[in-house]
Length: 272
Ligand code: ADP
Image (tube, rainbow, N blue to C red; front, side, top):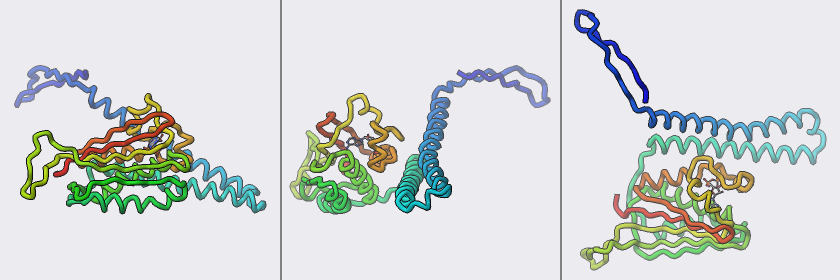
């Protein structure tokens, strides 16, 4: 609690007493702490690649440039780290835009079977490179009202993680199904009305330890830094996904077994 004393004066500037103001500041303090933690995390995350770029450039300038093989490998590191920096900045900006709700969503009906097909196609090069089989099972004629680009961002992010955290030869599957309301009515065409669309994205990957599960949607939280780094991750993907799902008034949950695989499940209301 914060205690403030405010003197009160009347119209003739005569002292009239003291106003006692008690304010519960826990929520404000918590927000402040979260904000400064975020700034500290961002600085740390940005510093790591910048330090690498600077260090390797310095070594090159100091003479390493004369050995073509060393020069090539250092330049590759500089290139990769700059690329990482770029992705990091992009994700930070994206997250801050989404969090401050500066992203207007454009809702329209999205037919899920062709939507999922197209989205998988966008990730197919990466899947083929890792020899990961991606399959989809989508009931025909399922629609959801969504911002198609944002929905694609959600599914692509989850799909990219599934591929990144699954070893070669594994598989990823997407299942989309309607969730029926127990008191569903029939519409004019005799179709049962459903209220939610459920999208499961499962992989046969390395899985996530139980103790980490509640935290993986936090900004910059990674189960294993080295693993995330080598997969090119920024640690922001799942926070962005969660925010986007919530902007669609949906929910996202995760279920995982270490060494067996993970399933991310999104529930989206059919109508906004
Ligand atoms: P990153 O950019 O590190 O992938 P994310 O926010 O997308 O960040 O994910 C956070 C962490 O959750 C990852 O670092 C990884 O440890 C874990 N993770 C996410 N998806 C999966 C998955 N499909 N299988 C195993 N671990 C995963």
